[in-house]
Figure 1 (spheres, rainbow, N blue to C red):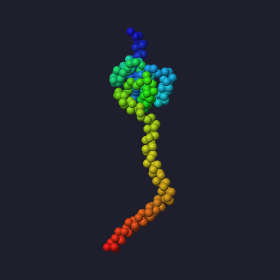
Figure 2: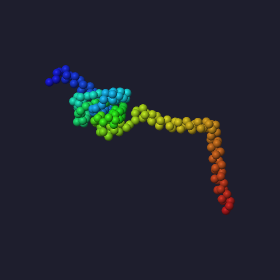
Figure 3: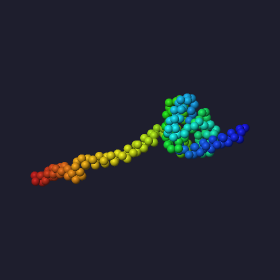
Figure 4: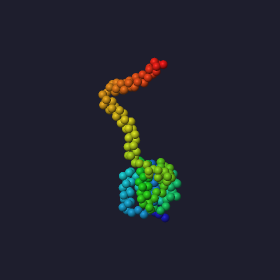
Amino acid sequence: MPSQSVLEQKKAIVAELSERLKNSITGLVVSYEGINTEDDTKLRKELRENDVKYTVVKNTLLSRACDEVGLEDIKPLLEGTTALATSDSEYAAAARILCKYAKDHDNFKVKAGYLDGAVVDMDTIISLSKLPTKEVLLANVLGAFQAPISAFARVMQAVVDEGGFEECLAKKAAEEAPAEETAEAPAEEAPAAE
């Protein structure tokens, strides 16, 4: 039977894992079997740069933490080597990095994941992995907002280049006037010919 201090340490680890699972918006459970130290170091660095917390965990301790937070569907997949990647700020970062890594390394695989406290299937994880980064999404949104403003600015510059608003109106009226006169002229001649 384990000593009281060992049991207390394990309880503290389970409590910490439970808190981490509760506070994160997304997480993945992976099997890291067969990766070398150099690749593992690169992976951890990339995850850290994207605010993803990545740690190796014992299956029994993660299983108990999953029970406490309602992620029981992950428990059957907790065998072999297991690491947990969680993010408190971005939904797609862990999936994007780990799925890409799994594609390049045969023994490394994503076992399961959760999103906002609910276990998700592999299709959802793969969909998340294909999303662009938060910065790219923000740039796209800003570009969409900026396009109408840019078009308006180009129109206003064209007005200025033409000599001002009144000048543009006079020019447009002059262009439309001959077109109206030629359109009306045949109509006036037609009754006279009868």
